[in-house]
Image 1: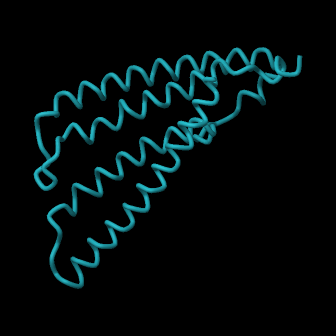
Image 2 (image 1 turned 120 degrees about the vertical axis):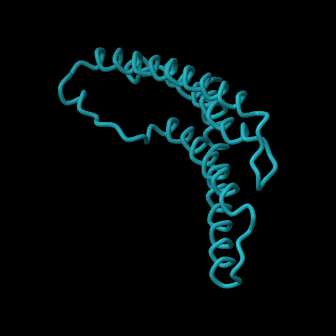
Amino acid sequence: MLSRLSAILSGISKAFAALAVALLAILISYVVFSRFVTHTTPHWAEELPRLVLVWSAFIGGVACSHDRSHLMAGLLPFMVRSPRVLNVVERVNQALVIVGLAVLGYAGWQLAELTGDQTLPALDVSAGTVYLALPFACAITIVVHLAQLFAPTPAMAKE
């Protein structure tokens, strides 16, 4: 069940990130066109693309965690040959990542609360909206890592 939820959240995050990147390309193209062709700049030219970029980056990280496509050195399998030891290290790593994400998400939540009453001048939305991307993405990524933590190992799946 947790594995299925993780896959669904990953698919939604991929779709969201893809749409956000497409929107970002459209926004930037429009701003460049406006600046150099019409010699006017939209009032939201700085803030809206930044807001879209932040949200797309953090939500896109959920899919990277699910697909295990984050950059890693991967030297441990060359030094340790025991599948049991590698499995234990993997489980400890997942647990540490979950703790780190929880701490990071909590700090992001506090930052969003601190800036919640401030508004972005051009967009007239709360500045906390930008910072809410962090706790939101951390919460979803924790679900993904919990699914990986409790997934059966390949050796256990064969039995």
